[in-house]
Length: 494
Image (cartoon, rainbow, N blue to C red):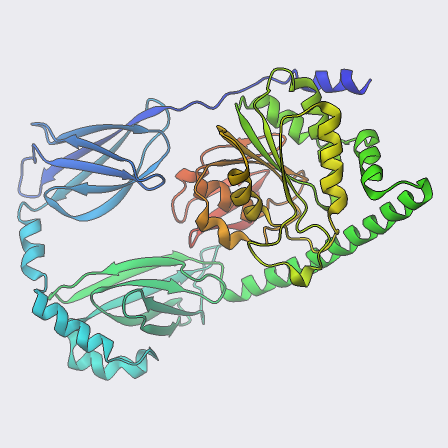
């Protein structure tokens, strides 16, 4: 009966996500009339660094073929500024018109500091205190006004209201000087930054929220920066709420483990044998996300990285059932299972070295179930956050050649080692278990966006996350998420 039900589920209409191509068109116009021909236009993919080039024609237009739904840095040979552009969907054309002076590059070069002036600028800036606020720097600004850029920062809340009394700092990448500020009742703040450095905007809960390069120039300069930001007060509220949720989740997992151990003792079986029986006999319930997603997406040569901690056992059963149907036709699959550190105490788990990660190539149906039971039984059922990134990083090193990485993750568990994301560059397709009726853990959205991967729920395949720019939002499962400071923030239910 279970097999008939499973086959019925696998008759869902499939959809295969294919690569596509679109066009970005530029028109280069002279502010004094006419157009610019024979100008080189270069686009650099912000995801993989690949470059695409075009040359403007007699109409001043340059058409460049690029992959769909990607973001690119734009460099034009006679245009001194850089900008960004996003490519449209399959077959579409994005259009960008630029009007500028023919002497733009010459004017910028004329105002640029020479090497001697740059050194004087650096000597002045390096002699400043390591950290100070506007009042403490004002006298130096008055004495050397051309060494500073006047920056007006405006912050608004997620619902568009002025974000008042929000503390922040700009820290120089090269000189390491920190400029501290706080917004007024209107959500704005004035700050002066020495030229010739890249400055990172930091908040208490959102370090490196944004970055801006301030060039060496002799011109009197002013810049306006405007951002929507969740705010420290709201972040602290959410941190408290998440801590309470995790505490309840960990108490539930601890109770379930105690009940499982008592059941094994009553049945007179080892934890491994008990887990094998549990995976074999357990009914997976209504959340058939693994069956639905695997059938919709025709991935090949999969490396499946699967969480086997805590309450993931119903989904492990579901994975085993799916494997029964496809193992004869998909012989190149590989598996990495992780249990967040075997049975070691939570306080001894180190980021990047937590362990509990096990690899196997495709094996027989019963052998895979036994292998999964062995890995799951070694888990301690301890803290809620899991070592997903460590499993990905070490898993790809354990595996042979593969094409697609598919991670099966617990939507109720944050990623404890999310800071390791910067070390991982391969696209990850994430199947979220337990997402029905619940917000998506933004850690998984961040992983998918920054690796060029995707998120998969029982109803949706979200494949365009990598194309989202700062400030853009997306709706998933009736909830809205916005990219803020390079990370996703849950805005509201819609």
